[in-house]
Each structure stands twice: as structure tokens, then as C-alpha cells.
Length: 200
Image 1 (spheres, rainbow, N blue to C red):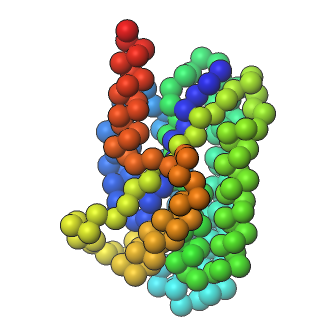
Image 2: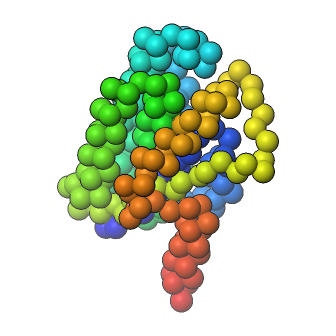
């Protein structure tokens, strides 16, 4: 069985959730993949705390990253075993997002480790052996900052400098993954074409 999996990727407030909420649940299986659970276990540190405390930022980024790895893997395993659901799987966030913030917090050593893990994980998703011979067709859906839209800062969001730094880091990291990275518009066009083919 062959299925598509999309990972939404982008810094804060770039439209990931807006597009996610517009998708038809009859065609897409949506996974929110929130960092709230791992952050709660660390006492929900503010972004100001993470900027000020290098050790806390390191612990936070590693903890969230490990949580995301486990969640993504378990969901892919669950869906690989399902032979009745052929909807495209959509994750609201990606491992690249976590690595982008790791870079923004200037955790260079941890960033290199996470980037290597993500590359290996991407390879596993596309070429690994999954239950029921499921073949995953992966695409990273890259959301970039629109400079025309003002950014509303609040305590639950990173400040503009961290947000912008994450965006730049994602651009730099994903340039090596052009074969699997698409824009939201390209994703919607692809799905529209596939829907048209299914209806013929």
C-alpha cells in the first residue's frame, strides 16, 4: 500500500494551523503534534527563560525533539498497519521545526546532532521497511514568513528575533532537501490533481 505523508514546516505564525483546519477530513488524516505535552513536563518555560538560560534551552530542545521522534514514529507504525485508510497523513509540525528553534537558541552542537537524526529519519520514512509493506511518499510543506503580515508577539510565542532566526535556519537546512520540499500551494495543487484522477 502506498500513502502520502506531509510534514508542515515553518516558524511561528506562518499559516500552518490555518491551512490544516481547511483540509477535508475525508481526504486527510490530521495529526496536530503539539509541543505542549513535553513542555508541560518541563514546567512550561517561557521563551524569555530559554533565551536567558542556555542549559535550560538545551534540555528543552532535546526533550521536545525526542518527544516528536517518538510520536511521529508511533503514528507512522499505527497507520502502516492500517489497510483500510488511504487518506494522506498530515502532521502540523515537523522535526525540522524543532531543529530550527535549536539553531535559533544557538545550540550548535545539538543542532548538528538533530539534523543528522532528521536526515536519517527522513530516509527511514521513505525507504524503510514498514508493516504491511506500506510505502510512504513524504513531502515537507515549507511555510515561509510573509513580510507583509505583521507578527503579533505574546508570551506563548517566540519573540520576532527568535522567530526570524528559526525561519532562516529552516531555509538553510532544507536547501539540501529540494527533492522532497514543496510549498503549500504545490501541495494543494497536487492533491487537487489526485482527487481529479480518483474521480475519473
